[in-house]
Image (cartoon, rainbow, N blue to C red; front, side, top):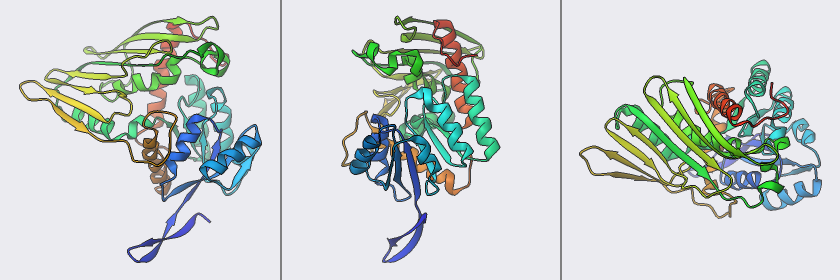
Length: 353
């Protein structure tokens, strides 16, 4: 049953617990499971891996009831309410379609798919089967990202004129792992481009840029190691983004308006501090720590994946098939731009049209 009794003010109240089925056991799955653990409305239930021992080890450490030696068995489990896809990204489309056709709700790690055409196919499948589908852009639920959006929309810095963002880390193993291989949809752009572009999409008016100029460096397999992109939205809003697998970039973002600016400190995609600069006034800092957790995480501030999980639970309670904060339109908007940047830089995947 999805229902359990929990103590509320001395009595008991029924609350729905959504049973999560995990596809994959890698580092992001580990972090999401750890972040999910304090949730009262959701819990790890089933885990699937191509290696059943990996699934068993995952459950022993992070909780859950069922360990499977395949992804298909998790999708087929009638007790599973929502599927979390944390596999290598070249598998995202296939697994998303299978889960949706089984009428499962789906939270798929970013990028949802490797290109626009595949994203459109996934979203069409969700609509056909009236199933919930969301790309896991956890940044959009982060409290200080919400605050940034609120400040921009309130006109606190005037009209936004420019956005700059960068994110990158020195990866000594890029040549020998999936992120450096086009077969797996590798490259820095797909790894972090949704963040460097996403912070700008919170600030500019138009859905799509009128101009994109991008250049980059590829490895010997044709995957981007570093990319610089400049975009123009409408007639007067400009965006400059950088991502890298070769260097540790500052990981900051600036939104600059006619009357001031907002500085998103490292790591800008999940910041614990932003600074508002308004002309003629003292700078104002807004601070919000990552959720406290007893767990150790692989990635910075991953305890904040809790916000994303709770947003999914809220959507499911309301019977929604997409999440307002990471709508299907948001996903399509992002991947459309990423496709154009890839085209200009020269990164090609097997599934591209």
